Image (cartoon, rainbow, N blue to C red; front, side, top):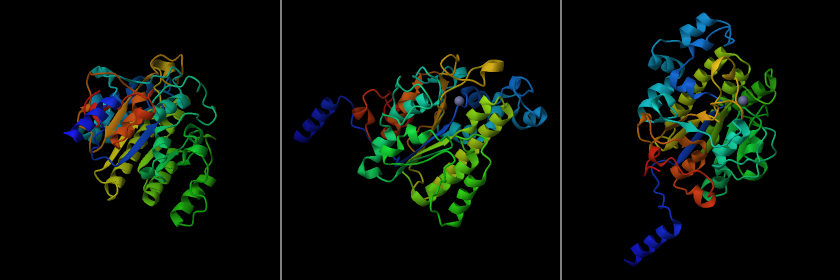
Length: 366
Ligand SMILES: [Zn+2]
């Protein structure tokens, strides 16, 4: 009785239930920059498979690859892993055609504010530029990396070279591999030397953003050799090609990212460290506009760029598939969701952060 009384007291004092941990021991957060919910839930957009306004060079080829009259077949053609595996075994949030919405809470609608919201759980109006200096806020990654259980087991790998600042690499106590920097300095293994060579010799189309495919190889090699428990993977091409007005490349890079996610999932499920105890959260940092011009853009003045999508797949996630109707979920809930999956209460130390997405990761709906 005394024990139960103490428990009850703890419960009342904290004001929130003690977090019951499920089967998740590892979390991978995957973000593909600026991929719209429209492409995720509707597949390729017919009007944009065009020389104008889509900037598509070979419309016949793109129609053959990605256009289907039926919406279910169309999105399956673009994102086969999403619509075969995640849609049947996990959760997809943000399907506005079904009355479900996922949104950002920051008003900026561009990347640094978005990643800050994802990683810290809160909008910080002071962060108003992608060139903003190292993040003064503590991300959930740093918060976990400071705990003994996660020391040396938290990492971020991405194409965009801003992540060293967004994670505050100098302070955070975690590995951050980003941009065109040599991924494995001092490497001696043939595989790592080859990856380094590729980074060193590739023509840099974007000076601050590496290509997704080699970064994906870095990620797989890092997982195989370092076995992180909390990992961020940031793909960048879906945003870059949209800004360039090349819808064929947007489609191709979205399709590639779907394949990369499947590859990460299959690879990790084949490793005893990760099998059946690893949850993937997949999302984007911002949406984009709609129509002939605004599909390329995002930012404070772009209507609709506040809407995103989220996908969750893992041993604690119910197989709800494409969620219809229900509450609006927000980008600010992701940080606490990552922690909650690991049985940790992020909101206790970060009271401004959004609450975990309870109904989608096991436990009670919030
Ligand atoms: Zn952008």
